[in-house]
Image 1 (tube, one colour):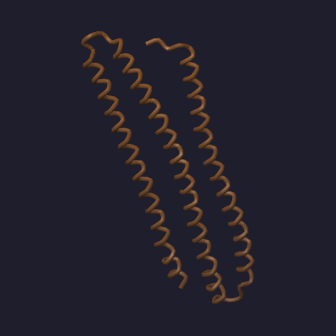
Image 2 (spheres, helix red, strand yellow; image 1 turned 45 degrees about the horizontal axis):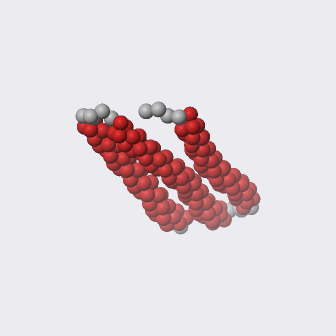
Image 3 (cartoon, one colour; image 1 turned 60 degrees about the vertical axis):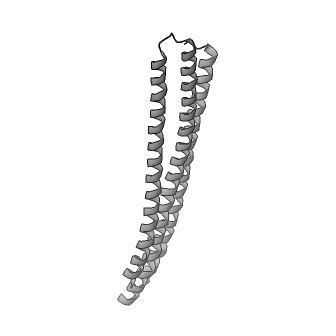
Length: 179
């Protein structure tokens, strides 16, 4: 199975483009995560200063109890929102990686099928069984990949649902704790 230099050059170019797409996805996710962290840090610093000023003005225990309640709930809600944002960024980045991997896997499968078909055209008599085995292995590999991809998607969906449910359950608990 001879491959012309042009085919190798095209393959190298495609691999370079794929690597650049992977890097772009990774850097995009990292950039969004950094922006989220920076905003959260700025907000936490501003809230911390406001809270310190508020606590410094407290004159008795009743005022302290009231201030504690007004400070705790917003901080909890902001922490929950931050965690959800981080999860969303990670999930979106993972989904982008998944799409790119699926595209690469489909392209690879297409190349393998073409190579098997070319090999079958020039294969010696009696090699039909080997070619059938190769095609069967390809089908089995594709089925395994699809099962893994489905399981990963289900895991991701379950994790997102659990995170959202935990946030919804925790908010009323925090409000009850204030009272």
